[in-house]
Length: 411
Image (cartoon, rainbow, N blue to C red; front, side):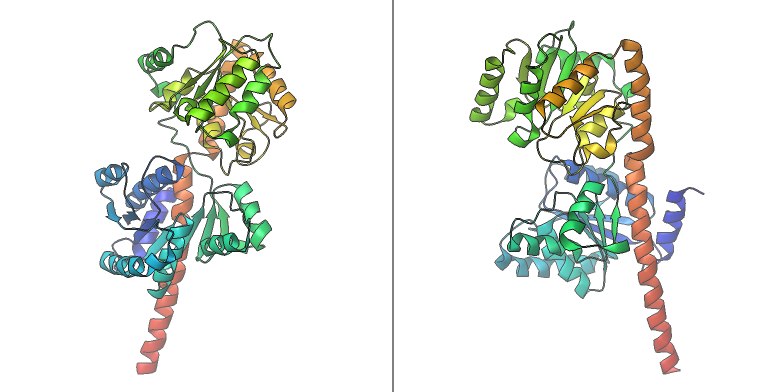
């Protein structure tokens, strides 16, 4: 019997009505992003494991995915940061949890935690939180806000880096804290599933040259993602052949775009780099790249780009910090440069550009298998379901003990 099958039988046995537990995930909104994607993936896993999936948020375009899979969504103001509004929201949330027959509440952000955890506890429900961010305490108020994410029965960190951040600031959490890396959809991010026409469509949309290695940085248009650092590193390997594509950078504010363009020109990279808008078909975009770079100047909590690129068999270069350092095996599935060291980044890029076609094919297979084995969505979902199952078993056993104690007293 598979792990998922065991979990499915288990959670059904230990729900309140014997029909599978009701798991409620609470997050700010269902827009595009890693937190939101993980919520959708877990909703499907809950249903597949014999439970019922409920999501509470302020809504967004991804709600349709929940509707298609048979999950339930309730729109509620769980992202409002004004504590004066939380009382009314908590009352509405309490009614929703009671109406849905909730067994477990899983919060995925700080404000939803402040709203939902007290309500769940007052109802005697099991609680779980997932810490997705860097969890930094810049002041006492920030520390207090962050601490609410640890006020649950179990805490999930999306990387070892995030776990270290939590324990550095709040001490050893023992078995209450688990690391469950956020997963990559290895079916979506699979070279075999991307048609040539999709790749051509992307290449044509950004007018990529066909006779030069493509170095790609897919990232939001924000300074800490390392666009400027990458351009400076590329300027230090002027004798190498390449074309750099900054996917998503063109979506930035005018000042960001102008500053980045001016820097590239000043560094002598005219005609060797371009800024493009974000793309909807990221698997096809990654297939058009030879090297994918993640030069974030501050550590990424997880580093999704590095994993998706490796799943597509692309060569990856990143700084040796944060989540990226946990997914890239230096010299085998990619290269890790000294954090925020332009010379080190340039050296790693040069090494990646030197890889022959046969070496590239060998590395492609190894990098994809590495992701399949350790960072798949399936693995993430099974690990999380196992945590739910363990917590529900504990709660069920306690409830039975209390009931039997009461029966003995009445006898």
